[in-house]
Structures are given as C-alpha cells and as structure tokens.
Image 1: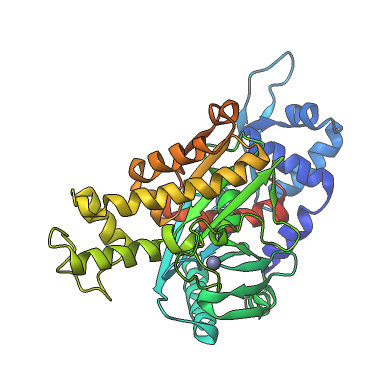
Image 2: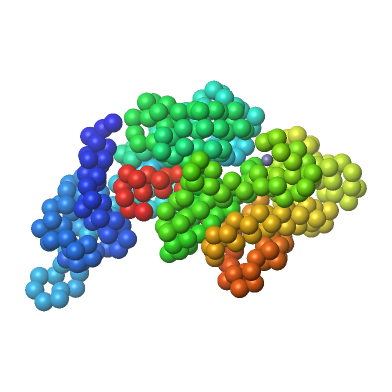
Length: 397
Ligand SMILES: [Zn+2]
C-alpha cells in the first residue's frame, strides 16, 4: 500500500469527513459555505476537512461562485480520477474486469475466457485478470469489488457455494486482500447488479427497486430503503430455483422445473440447439453447436427474423413473469429492471413477462409497475461490485 492509499483510508473514516465528501460528490461543484449549510456542520470544521481532502488530492478548487455580498465563495469539486476502483464480474462464460473512476467512468477493461474453468484454475484466472488491471492504472487504487455467482457472504467475503465454479467456502476476500493489499468486497452478482443500478443507473432516485438478472443463472437484487438487502442466509432474490414447471426438467440444484431450466441463457441455448437439429427452417442449423451456439448467436438469429425461436423466448419471458410476480407482489416494489444477457432480447422477452406478471398480481398494483431493461448493459455487475467500495470505503453512496 503506498502513502496515498493509506491516507485515503484514514482520511475518510470519520462521520463528518464522509458527510462532507458525500455532499461534494452529490453537489458536483459547491462552496464551503454551502457544504456547511447542507451538512449543518460549522464553517471551521468544513474548512479543516476540505483542506485535508485538497492536500490528499481528492478535491480541488475550481474558481469562484457568485458573491452574495462580500468575498465571492471558492468553488470546490471532486477530482473524479483521484482514485481508481476495480470491478470484476465472474458470472459469465468469460471473466470480465474493469478499472473505473469515482464516478463509474470506465478507464480500462480486460476479459479472459473462463468456460469450463473451475476450482483453483478459476481462482488463478481471477488473479491473472486482476493483475492485468492493476498494471493498467497508475492512479492510487481504492480497492477491488467482486461480483460472484452463487451464495456469497458479503460480510466475510466468502463464496459459500458457486456450483458453476466449483467453489465451496472460498475465502476470496482474504485471498485477494493478502495478494493485493487493498480493500476487497465480494458479493453475489445479482445483488451487486442492483447496487450498480442504484448507484450509477437512471434509478438512483428510487428508494426501492428490484433488478432481475437473467444470464447463465437467474437472480434478483433488492434495494430496500436505499440499502442492498442480502437476506438472512445471503440468498435474497434467489428466484432461479423457484419451481415454475411441475415435473419439469432436472435442475443443477437437484429439483425439477426451476426457473433456470426454462429461462436462463443455458436453457435457451439448449432449446435453440434442439430446434437447429430438428427444424429445417432454423437459421442456426449450420452452426457448430459446441463452439458457435452462444446466447448472442441465438439473439442475432432471432433479430434477423428466425421465427423458430419465437416460442423459446416467449416461454422464457412467461416463466420469469411467474416468478417475478411472486417476488414483487409480496414486496410491493414498483420499479423493476431486467439485466443480463437474456435481457437483450428486449420486447420479445418483456412483453410475455409483463403480461404473465400482471395476470398474477392485484390489478391496482399491476397498473403501477414499471419494468424495463437496465441502461448499464453488460457492465452492470462490474460497476456494482466497484460501487460497494464507494459505499463502504468512501461513504458517497
Ligand atoms: Zn434449481
């Protein structure tokens, strides 16, 4: 850890320091007098703390505001690239990482193919990915946030169980902390997706929201009263294993007919492969099933007018609607966002989803529902993982 990093973590740990930095973060540009007015702290306290931020390179003076009688106030603002953060997404068939600044603007990216990679091999791939990102930036690093599939204990930073990666009780925070000597946060990929939407998305004004992430797995992240809700066993929003088809197909969890067996990207790819083998009208029939048939290939064929795929996407949307109706009906949350690779099917997925969801809810609630795809696209998990650092290390979220 270099001197700047030490200073940062010492600098912003008291309540008043966090309050003032958050005010500067929220206001964009502001004066010491306005900070004192907003925070109800005294002018000398504000001046001392802002001077510390300036010395530490977090905040700069950028000129003068309009005078309200007497000396015009000096305007201060956050230096958005004063610190960088690393966000990692381990939920897909490739591991993805990004270096972002304090406003969530992407500065560097890296990706490594991870299909079939499990256990220690997967862990080594995570090291390789982070090594390359650490080398890419010469700005002091605030820390590293990880969005992992499976059940994750965010307090201890332990991946309790990630079936796809064959990780069990993996102390990821400790392993990465020992290696990189910076703050490490680890949480479930759907949970951090909600954190991203709340922090950087167009929904940051909402007190409550639900992000449904539909990719290889399916899960929901819940923001209640501006806080991420993890649940008693860190499994809040685990809707992927709600049974939606009686006596349906066998799921990786051992049960039958789970939502993931009909609406995950894996389920959609399997069904598309079956159609490609059996339906002469399929435009996917010439693709190599094992290497070329990805969720994006299915989507491109669908968007190019392959009607054989229509029932597959409708069915996926329909069953997500079944599961989501139960979740949001019980919670009475009006704002739902859909994220993940399957969300990119857009209206073809959302229309049957909404119809089925509405059919299963009190009409008076259904009328108030807003459901749409996230604007954060494929970056959502990386941004959300890094947002955990903004919340816990800097206190600006
Ligand atoms: Zn299951």
